[in-house]
Length: 216
Image 1 (cartoon, one colour):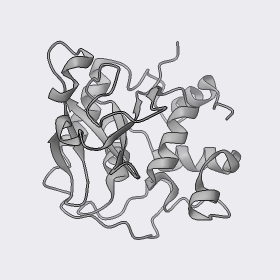
Image 2 (image 1 turned 180 degrees about the horizontal axis):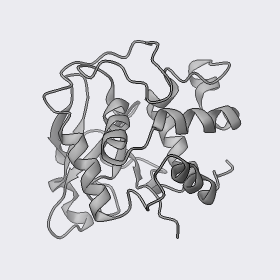
Image 3 (image 1 turned 45 degrees about the horizontal axis):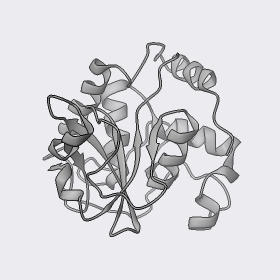
């Protein structure tokens, strides 16, 4: 898979009034985590149905959504990043490297739904140099091998088959890999946005760990 050029990505962010380094610093990670926590009690439902939304900066009703919407809203509210636009533009230029055709039999990019699918977000994060780790075999859902920090994005396979995504909103003081079970995650597993302990994901499978790149 050909990676999206990091410099091109940063130029895109700058064009969107985001010239500063994002996501990798503690302060930006905390902004993302805060934006994720703010969704708890606001997003109270779950609805995976296809819905026509505006473009760019489109969204379904804040009271509902899917797990990916937690990430989309946190990126938009915390950093001013529009993942709908970023994913759509990359899929338009490189559609065949995304799983849309083989997984959902899509014939072309769809700005209404593509960014709201976990597998597409994973592909986008990998292509932008945001991937810190990706599983090559079975790994318990609370056993990410690299330390997690606030604002990081993590993905799983629920019951070893269903893609799921969430945002780290709290970590242990030491930040060591051994303390990952003490981390807290905001996600939407079907009951709206909620905050859970990472240890609750132990029966599932860890899939990926992502952090927005700096310009270095």
